[in-house]
Amino acid sequence: MSNESLNPSSLTTNGRLVAYSDSLKTGLQHGIEFTKLFDQLTDTKDANELLEASTALFDFQMDTEYVVYPHKYNANDYYLIFMSRLLELHSDKDAVLHSREDNLKADTLYQTFPNIDDKEEFHFEQRANQDGAFYVEQNSHQVIFSLNLEEKTMYFNSDTITKLFITEWSDKSDKDEVTNAVDLFIQFGKYLVSDFDFSVDFNMLDASNDKKYILANTNLSEQIMDKLFVATADNNLMLQNMDAAQGAFLEFGNNIVFSLYKETTEDGTGRWVITVHDPEEQYSLFEIFNQFSFLKKWFLDNIDELQIGSKMV
Image (cartoon, rainbow, N blue to C red; front, top):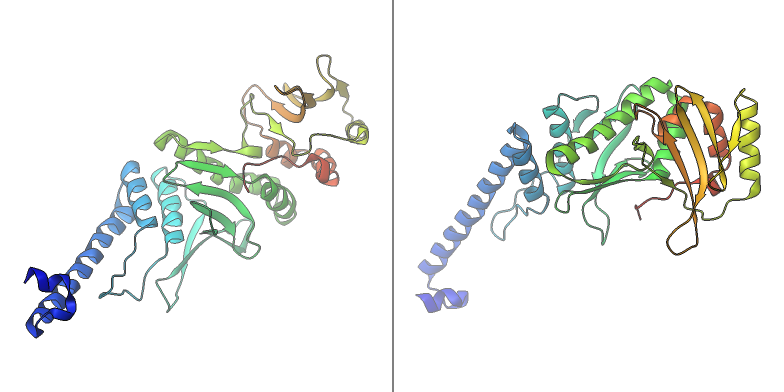
């Protein structure tokens, strides 16, 4: 019998029926294993169990040769459920999770931010030859951040922060609503760090005083500082030259300081950086642009030179 099992064509009729039944049982048991992980994903109150289930489901293949499940979520949906559940565990539910009936599989999942624009839908998608998943605006496919649960990494995309948060959203809603919506992404990243020790690059959303926003462009034209000087003077502020470096700084009051200067690197080439310092570490570069429209305009008018670099590809 063991020899027959190695060569299906040699099985007797009864042997084929037994093998068929065993294959069905294996496929059904595989489905049961899926439901256990899915229940864990949707029901657990433990953050580590949540991460464990999400990571396992991302690579889980439900179908077997003999058992195929026509209605199922895809790997990207598990990332979205993970995000929604982690925010829920921390009592933070500003992003609304929706489902749309799809007869080809299970319901299609997506998120919206109704206080900004309920027509914009956000979900995760995978990219060819790239690990993890990317949280994107569904229509434009602008990447807000990348997330890899297995590698425990998260990277925010400075280009989308500029285009979506600083430009488009600021025209759709007031600055407080924009801040509240973006804060949800920040909190999600912070929960990843505190709960699971993720490595997170918040990019322009990082409000720590030691954060250096590195410009993608290593050389700036002289006109950049001139334009900044004019913009600050028009708003009754004074741009001051720095003593220890090539650059300038601007004080907003309450000890909030915005600086743009050239920093010497180890290889001697140098790079331009922006820093924001405030005693409470509440102001990221994004929030500075959100709060001070004249500085945002200067940044957007000169974005080709001032775009912040990103680890995103």
